[in-house]
Amino acid sequence: QDCLGQSVTLTPGSNYTFTCYLGTDGTTLGSGALMYILIGTSFGIDYSQDTLLVSFLPNSSNAIPYQKFTTNFTATTTSEILACHGVDGASSILMDNASIVLAVPTTPPLSLGLSPSNTLVFTWPGTTNGVQLQANASLDTINWVTLTNAPETVGSNLQIVLPAPASNQFYRLMVP
Image (tube, one colour):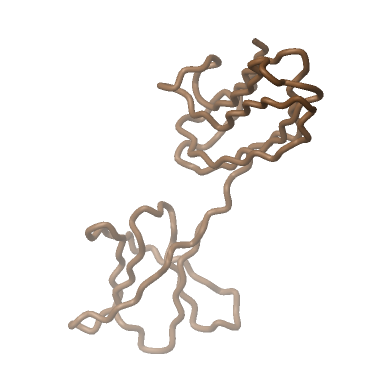
């Protein structure tokens, strides 16, 4: 078994995308060739501490051209180990262009309601962390202001209640 490990610094709770290309340079038919790529706190293969990112089990009588593998995962600690464990037969498993990048966060849908007391009720899914409600008097400017009101959890959603503005106001959610 061949092993390769690299410590990576991540932000716990953030989502990342792991990408790599794997192929072979010859036959792997019946050889038991495989490549496991994991990330976690151990260098071994310990599924209680590590997340399996890629399982590559080539079984071909010919060389296999590079194939792209992409997996998303959530970091659990600040320092994790990207570990590659390979077993090959008569040929080699080839790995190229491996990367871990911060996944592009998506902005959750924002709902607006009017309460009986004439206040604005902004609601979005509570599974999204760190989003900020912003306001601007005009869509033609870049002067968005992040509101300091802390959202409250209501059921499975986050919510901010504001008094109705005296003039036009535009609102959006922003992922910092």
